[in-house]
Length: 148
Image 1 (cartoon, helix red, strand yellow):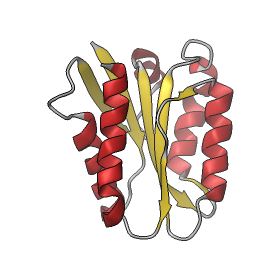
Image 2 (cartoon, rainbow, N blue to C red; image 1 turned 120 degrees about the vertical axis):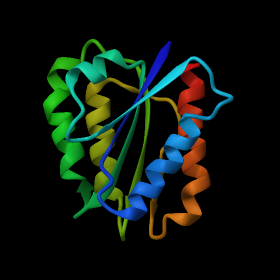
Image 3 (cartoon, helix red, strand yellow; image 1 turned 135 degrees about the vertical axis):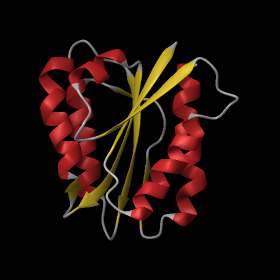
Image 4 (tube, rainbow, N blue to C red; image 1 turned 180 degrees about the vertical axis):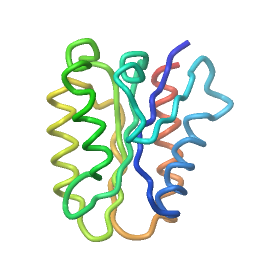
């Protein structure tokens, strides 16, 4: 069975609703043969990353960067997973209050260093979450279906 690892940092109710939409898509009953494993960014481990076949990452844009929790995740696993996970598919979502440019650059830089392969267009936006919940669900479903 393929495994999709969802690593996220969702400290607000709005971000929780976004993650829930992503997970609803990833766990769509029409998608078979994919186990969805969810880890808060501060709890995800090297073993979680190595055991997954693909990745879906979620963060807020904080002070022009990815959340400190997601940065900690990358710092904690980077050296141990870089070579064994090269070319694995991933995508991500970023929600910012006003700006996401720095967070997007960070995500691109880190995942390029990991040599992961962007498999679905990321969901990146500012402002209200509600208009983006359908796209979040689609992102989750797309990533799970790619692993099916």
